[in-house]
Length: 326
Ligand code: PBG
Image (tube, rainbow, N blue to C red; front, side, top):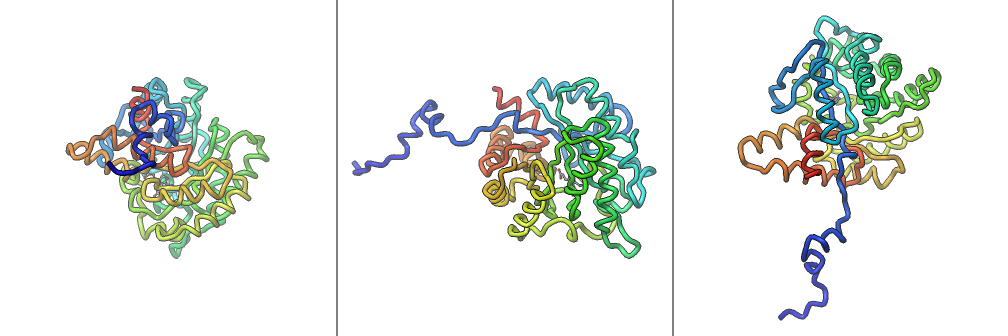
C-alpha cells in the first residue's frame, strides 16, 4: 500500500461526488443558433456543412420552431444575397425590405420570445466579398464603412433585432453604432462586438454557405493575426469604452486562451463562436465513424464554457440542446 493521504480519485468515485466537484455547467441557455437564409422557399444543402442548410422563409420558421422545441432561445441570421443585389457599397444591407429585415419581422411576429441577433458587416452584400467598402486601389476604407454599418445596424434594429453583432472589425464601429441606435430611440438594443476576430482558415465553409469569399486578397488588414493576444486586450478596452454589451472571441476552439484572457479582464459577458470549420471538422470525423459526435460536440462546447464564454454560437446548437436534456 502507498502511504497516500491525498487521493484525488476519492472525489471522482461516483456520479454524486463527481457532481459536487464539477466546476462548469453547460446549458441550452448558453447556446446561440446561427442560421443561413436565402430569398426563396425550401432548403438548400451546404456542401461543406453536412446537416446544415440554407433556409428559405418557410424553412426558417420551421427550423426555429424545432430549435425552440429543443430548448434554443437565441438565433443569429446570415443572409445569402443574390449576386444581382451586391454592390460596391453594399447598400442592400440597409434595405428596409431586405432579406434580413423581412426575416426578423417574420420571426418576431411568429416567435416574439426568440432573441434575434443580427450580423453587422458588408461581406454578404459587397461585390468585393469584403466586410468593408473597398477603394479603387484595393484598400478597405474604415470610416466610410462605419457610416454604412450604422445604416445597416439601424435598419436591423428598426426591423426588431434584439442585439446587433458587428463582425467586421472596423475601428470605431461600436461607438458609432451605439450612438446612432441611441439617437433613434433604440437604447434597449444590445451590441455584441466581435472583439477578437482572427483572420482564420476556419471560416471556409461559411463563405461557401453565403458565397461571400473575398474576390481578391484576404482579410488581414482588419481581422487579427492568429499569433496575437495582447492585441485582443487593446480591442477589448476600446469596445468597453465604446459601449459594447458583450465581447466575442472567434473562432473558439483554437483560441481558448484568448477567451480565458478576456474573461479575466472584463466584467462583460464573453461570447465565443464555434465557427463553420470547427463544425465541419467534427462532422466529417463523425461521418467517417472516427469520432463519437455527441461526446465530441459536448466536450468541445464544455471546453469553451470552461475557458470563460457564457454565450456560445454553434451550428450544433440544436443537437447539443437535445443531448443536454437527455
Ligand atoms: C463575416 C463573417 C464571417 C463569419 C461570421 N461573420 C466570415 C468571415 O469573416 O470571413 C464566419 C462564421 C463561420 O465561419 O462560421 N462578417
